[in-house]
Amino acid sequence: MANKAVFLDRDGTIMHDHGYIKDPQKVDILPGVSEAVDILIDNGFMLFIVTNQSGIGRGIMTMADVNKVNDKMLSYIGRNKIKEILICPHGPDESCSCRKPGLKLVEAAEKKYKLDLKYSYSIGDKDCDRQLGENFGGTGIKIGEKGIKNLLNAAIFIIEKENSNKK
Ligand SMILES: [Mg+2]
Ligand SMILES: [Zn+2]
Image (cartoon, rainbow, N blue to C red):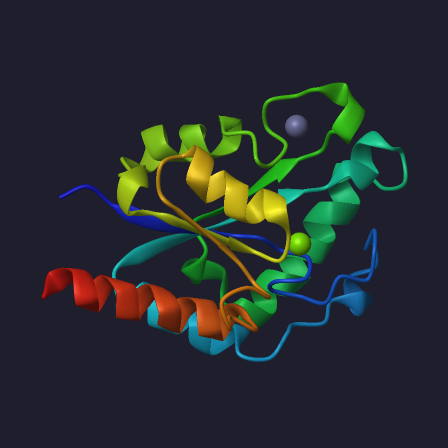
């Protein structure tokens, strides 16, 4: 059986969205994130973070800044729990194919990890995060919709959906 994945947004989903964060001290993990990550892993999902960091393209911060912030975030979540962090560094006007809901980063992970995207999910706090899952032929979940208030709610939603599919 092919692997299934959940592609998690970073800002506003895993940690508070404080704008273009370049100071690792500002990393502020949202409630329920650790539990959500563990539930998804226990249910057989590979986890990726996919994040648009246009602050790099805009010259507000560097990839090194983003990596430092990501490192701090991983120290809270557990380094071995996230397969990879996929970053689009471009601004919206650069018309790249990696900026969410573009599929370039997801498709690279699909090949490398032999993912079955049909059985995979995206979760995030913006329309582009829902659109990402729809674009790759899986399920996209936007936090703030359908009574899903945070990442933990989204993880529970996925597990309930999986269990009802098995019946
Ligand atoms: Mg976000
Ligand atoms: Zn890009």
